[in-house]
Length: 261
Image 1 (cartoon, one colour):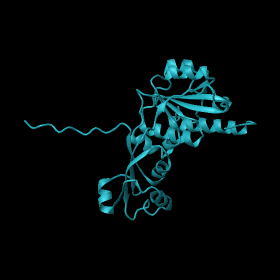
Image 2: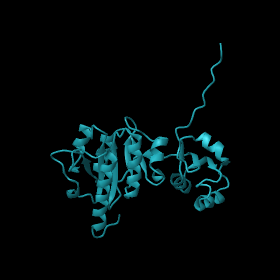
Image 3: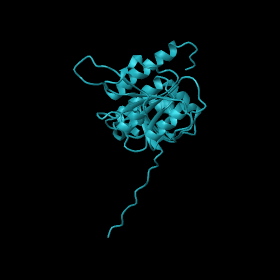
């Protein structure tokens, strides 16, 4: 009887990303252990001065300069721009206390987003809109995967990602800490998105693709916001919706006198 080969376990904290922008943001961020950098000789990445500067300052990184043919064979079908980085490090953390936080604090709460592409886009949008963190459940969600990190284009290196066992419980905790909970949902009771006050301490809840925010979570919301559609489609993609909401929030914060966001 042939002895089974024991498969090597891969740490849950090991990830790989590719592409110049995402890799640069990762390499600039602290707290990540760079396991390997595969760099294609003569590629766009290999000629980039910012990358060359980083490589010159971190000679301890494991750099593998690969011939073009070998690199393209290894990463066939991937738009890498000539660079792939394998790293280890914590990219998510437990939801901390915001009880002592003041001013314009914004958290986005993703209630069971199942599409990795959407979750990655949401991370990218949150970081670009100056959000203070993304909260997501440990179950029934896309979770933090290579695809999610890839789509975020390096934003994951700068945006706190808070994992919680129970979204409803997390929202009740945030309420006690002074947050207003705003659900983004198509509803006859919902206000138009620009009429909702997004300043101060707010947690903005978005629901899963197709099903929206779960009823128990929706009951926790103090306000509901909606974006009325003008065409024949009934709703926006969830990542497009949160982009409109977050930049409306940013507009309000920047217009408010004495804003500290």
